[in-house]
Image (cartoon, rainbow, N blue to C red):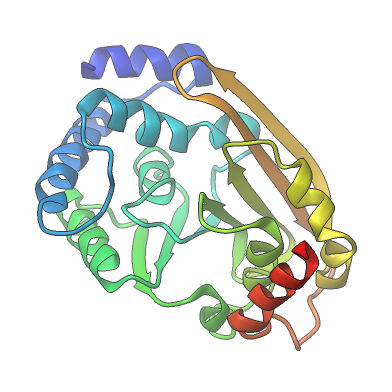
Length: 238
């Protein structure tokens, strides 16, 4: 896929006008990703068109349904930077924090951030539930793409999000089962389900991006230890 073809795709599908500078950054991103992927297991997708569609374009879909300008956004489980780093390239007036517990991936992200000369994004090697005490009530938005189930993600991010902010889960398949699994948990954590952005494209299939608004402060006992959160999911599935 050429840069112009990608620019046209993003404009026609998402109404985002990419600049030449942003397209150049994405090109550098792709080259660096492929090169570093030879050393580390960053992604199974390395074909250029697939990276541009299944990683870059897919990361930008959330911007069609939700306002991301002038926000502080945390990306949990950012991996090789999807969606957080892609969004940081496009939304230069927002601040991004990329969180991942895999040191090799955050090292890759930091090197790439420096290579691109970005000043609105940082990568942190940590677990979200641990960072919640340090970055309490900092985020306007916390998002996560293909990381874990909603019941886990909502809890581990709950303290990071300020009242009036949002958690957005980027989901590829239907979220009906995960929503039913939540039960009354959003209310206990101070959230209220807001809306679901449903997007379908023949190139990537169906995307379901779901938002939970933070309407009140989360009780100090949350988030619990990850093992306890995960245990609850297993128990509820039986």
